[in-house]
Length: 88
Image (cartoon, rainbow, N blue to C red):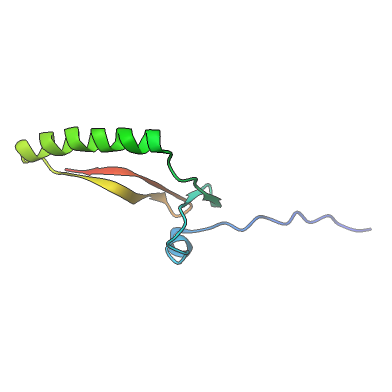
């Protein structure tokens, strides 16, 4: 009698994520590696406007910094996303 064994999918970690090709945008959700699409021009335009508003506000009040480029947000070893980040 044969026993069926379920093969588990590979679970990616942040350490492995850091070794990936830097020319692509990836995210890890529940250990699954996903390729994130590039933002469209509408999105980029709004990010630029938002960055300008936040940058001026934070700089005037000496409250922190805002970054435009993707920044890794490591939620745990199997959940890493890239988002715009505020540093306070």
